[in-house]
Length: 221
Length: 286
Image: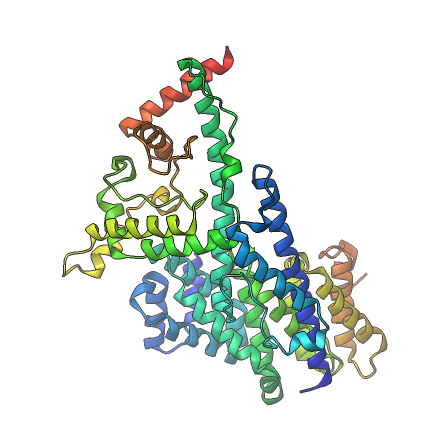
C-alpha cells in the first residue's frame, strides 16, 4: 500500500528515471545513489507536491540501503546536497519564491521522515529553524505563499522541533506574534493563518474543538 | 547579505555553543564515577583529548565576534571531538556512531551486571575463597573519544568482504577462543598500544577469510540476508574477566560462550546456558 503512493509520486518522472528510482527502492546497491539523491532534490525544488512527500521515498531508500549493506551513501549525498542549497537560500529566494518554498517544504519533510536511532537528525535542527525563521520575517510575511508554507511546516513538525530546541521556537513565535499584531499590510488570510498557528502552539500543538470549528467550518452556526 | 542574516548566524552559533558545552561536562562526570577512587584528570586517555577539548571550549566562551571568525558561518560546529567534519552527511554519520556507542555501552553494562550475578553464584557453590568485590563496571572504558576511536577501527575491520565471509562461514556459536578471530572489546581498559596491537592481530586473522581472487559481489550481497542481528552487533558479549589477565583464558571461554549464545536458539550451548540459569535461579531462591 505504501508502494502505491510511491508509484504515484514517481509518475511525474520520465521512464528512465522511474526505472532508476524503482531500482533504488529495491536494490540501492546497484544504482548510483548520488545521482538518485540529486534527481530527488531537483524534482523537489521544482514540484511542490513532490517536495511534500519526497521524505517518504528518501526514507525507503535509506532503509533499503541500510538493510542491504549497512550503507548510508544516499543519506550522505542527500544531506550534503541539502546543505549546498541551504548555503544559497537567499539567492534562491530572490530568484524564485516558488523554489524557495519548495526547498523549505522539502528540508522539513526530510526532517520529519529521516531519523537516526529514532531521533531527529541534529544536523538539520538549526537549518530548519533558520528557514522557518526566515519565513517569519516581515518581508516574507507579506507573501501568502510563504506564510502558507510556514504554517504548514509548523503543523507537521512544530512539536518535534520544539522538543529539540525550545529557545529557537520561542524566537520564531516572537516574530510571528509581532507580525500578526504589528505588521501593516498583511492580508487577512495571512493573519488568519498566523492566528491559527499561534493558537495551535498555545494549545500544545493541538487545536481545541471550538478553535477547529472556527478555522475549518465554512458555515458557522 | 542583510544585517538580519548576520544576526541569525550569531544566534545559531550561540545555541550551538550551548549544546557543545554541556557535552564534555557530562562526560567528565561519568569519568569521575567510573574509576576506583582515582581522579582521571591525568590519565592518558584524558591527557590529549580532554585537554584539547577544554581549550576549545574556552575559546568558545570568548566574545562572539572573535569566535565567529574561527568557524564556518553555516556550520553546526564540530559534533565529536575526534572528527571535525563539517558537512551534514558526515555530521550525521558521526552522530549515528556516537549514539550507537552509547547504546552499546548501556547494553554492555547490563551484561556485566547479569554476568556478575552468575559468577557470584558459581563462586559460592564451588567454595572459592576469592573475593568478588571487584566490580567490572569500574574498569570500563567510558571516555567517548576513546570509544569512538576504537569503534572506528573496528568498523574498518568489519567493513570488509573477509569479515562478511567469516560471519557466514563461522556462526557465532561455533567460534573458539584462540582459533577464531575475536573483535577486541572496546569497553575494556587497555593502553593505546595494547589496543592497537589487538586490532592489528584481529585484522591479520580476518585476512584468512579474504575472498578467493574471483568472488562475485552478488554472492556477498545474498549472504548478508542470512545474518542474524547478533552478528551485526559489534559487542562481543563476553563479560570481562575478574582477573587482570588480558589473554582470554580457557575458563572464560565457556562462560563467554554461554552468554554469547543467548540469541541463537537451537544450539547445544544454549541448553547449557539454560541449565546455568536454572541452577543459579535455584541457588538464589535458597
